[in-house]
Length: 269
Image (cartoon, rainbow, N blue to C red):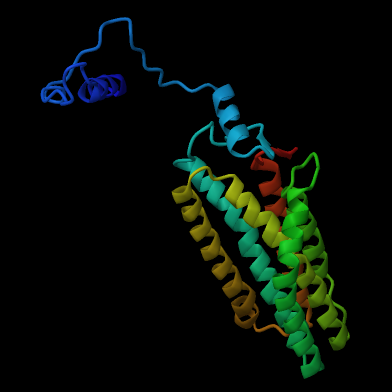
């Protein structure tokens, strides 16, 4: 088709030696090219794709532009459901741990207003100031696990330790929450970047992102509503058992995500 249009266009715009007018019949009927003179190749090799990315982005070499988990295509059916669950589970448990830790750490009678102000101010500043720094650090990371998975695993381990151990002194509980909030940029960068890199198309990425945000909202409701539904106090044994269970779920979900979802391999020159 492209060869036919090219030939018709060349005939329509060609000029003869004694005339300056275009041929009025050049576009009237399709022309069939002679056999053996035109060929259309619809297959693109991996070398052509790599050469294209090298020309477009000379600072990057894409060793594998497709996910092995998707078989080289867009995840559909059970595969998309599995990917959605693997991405949503750590986000849900992380929010549940965070709000349960707020309940246990900051709602005790002995916590002063100055401690509350310090905690919320540090939380906002950590997200605004540390996220770009952690993201830049992650882009240049060289690890066998990848660039995003070490951040995700480290945040899950530190967050689980902070959630599982809360001191009895009310003023020290605020510092425990500060330690958990400091891990938040690690988790957000690791989890968010991994979500973007494992989805090849924008509409698939938007669908998975919407599911992850819904999981975050559900985790917030669990972290706030479950202690209220159980009628537990921030420092009693039931609350500590709940925090231990959430910590185990956080480690398990982050470990499954890091183990089962492959990360796109990108090396900076």
